[in-house]
Amino acid sequence: MKLSRKNGLRATALGALAVSGALVLTACGSDDNTATTPDGDKTSAAASNIKCDGAEGQLLAAGSSAQKNAMDLWVKNFQAACSGVEVNYQSIGSGGGITKFNQGQVAFAGSDSALKEDEVAASQKICKGGKGINLPMVGGPVAIGYKLEGVDNLVLDAPTLAKIFDTKITKWNDPAIAKLNPGAKLPDSTIQAFHRSDESGTTQNLGKYLSTAAPADWKHDPKAKSWPAPGGQAANGSSGVAAAVKDAEGSIGYFELSYATANKIPTVSINTGASAPVAATTENASKAIAAAKVKGTGNDLALELDYATKAEGAYPIVLVTYEIACDKGNKAETLPTLKAFLNYAISEEGQKVLADADYAPIPAEIATKVREIVPTLS
Image 1 (cartoon, one colour):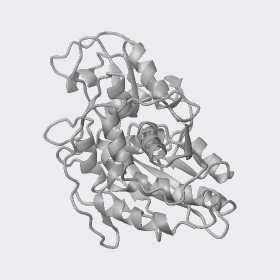
Image 2 (tube, one colour):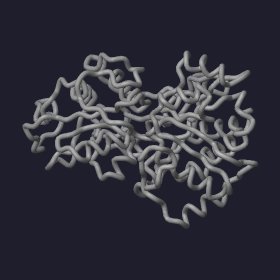
Image 3 (cartoon, helix red, strand yellow):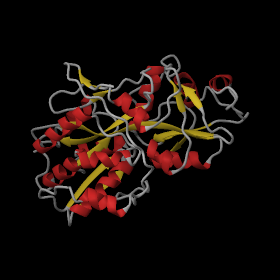
Image 4 (tube, helix red, strand yellow):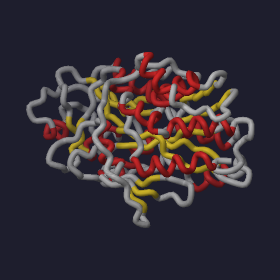
């Protein structure tokens, strides 16, 4: 449970997180993703510690829908503290966010996967004298949600998941599923597998898990942000996949844990080869995230996750959402607001609200590094 640089940097163990339920907020972007609302006192207390540091006007951002529920909380608290400021985050998927960022349409992008080399190169046209960098702000499990009457504790492993999402297992009573769930009353019905229709870092993280933990059964490009497998049904954003799974008997899909909690969707426990199947919880995801390595250089904090972990209690299908900003060359008119907002998001106060929304705060040493970098953005 340590997070380390390849050059020896060690992180402290990330402690267990208390989860108090989902939070529902009205979305500040143009989409309809929602989360549950904290009580007014909690929001006021969080907002009272925020430093506005010259923040003013409108700040536009776009990207990951996996972090949208966390972003809603941050935006609400930040706008409550900083009068006259409007932060508008559009939940359009990681790929869409990076595209908008590299076109200069938004001040920062949210992405569940780090920038690729060609995306960094493209960012240099917008970040005059600099480039886009990855700043990890949100962690959490990618939950596998399902709807199957009479089955409350479904267990699957990587090869079985790969075959389901690759339409090679099409019935719920398939022998591979039955073997992992002795005693369960699995129906002889067709599996309805849902995936994202938009470019998504969540899709990419699931693909990386499947290709790492079940390489013989998932032959698709692990770096693909667009769904690479044949068959299945598509829905837009994490909210769209969650809504589809909630409504369709015999369905299965993937989305960030808060969408499962908000929609009361049961989630799959993963047989990793450890002594017991691992549930999708923030605490279990934290055990996997805290073992990540920093692969970025300089002020870039891109992480390398171990999707094939067999550590006890470590949930392997995890993602880290990055806020992507220019290290140099940010627009002068939005720079104070950008820095103030990101400073709040990575602050102790900003990270504390994540656990209440089924997210995992960033491990302490990496959070400290981000707090050092954000004030240097120029």
